[in-house]
Picture (cartoon, rainbow, N blue to C red):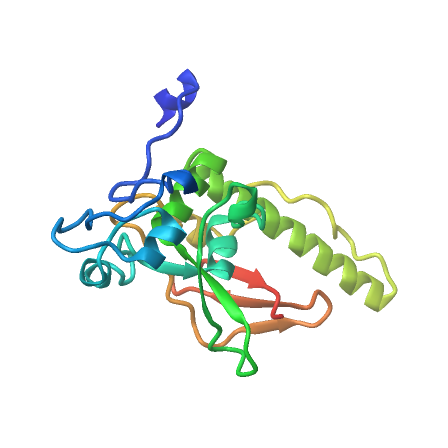
Length: 220
């Protein structure tokens, strides 16, 4: 990977990843790329540019499988993809629209192919380490905003608050040592604990994995 970066070459796709979506005008029917015996699903092909039958997709759609689908929130939180990168109108990833189970009154949620999200994240951040560093930088910025909000609430300037912490201090050692390799076959899947914390000043929720990794997000 380092050698490819020095040469300016594009990084390789993650192991087991389906090919990226072809141009829409090139899409058509086709046999399943897995078994070669059944027709690919038209809806799956339209969304992701991959011809795969229902049985083969079902066999590989579990956690970590190459046809696993993830929500837009997960694509943003775990792979730091932007709204534009998740919008096919602007050349971003394709998605499947399904009814949102969290909104009884209707509405749809967008599902993305995990392997395509990983591939785009790798192209964006160059490596899993680059993605981790960006996560840490954003976590530092959120912490600075929270501390500033606490200072305003108390009406005092908190000593040492708002300064940029050294990289060694920005993440707990245990979490840093155990951060998951995102683009390997042995990638860690976070198991977030049920007890989430809410910061009223910053209007953010925090959920933590058993490995020490934490993610902050807004509930809409």
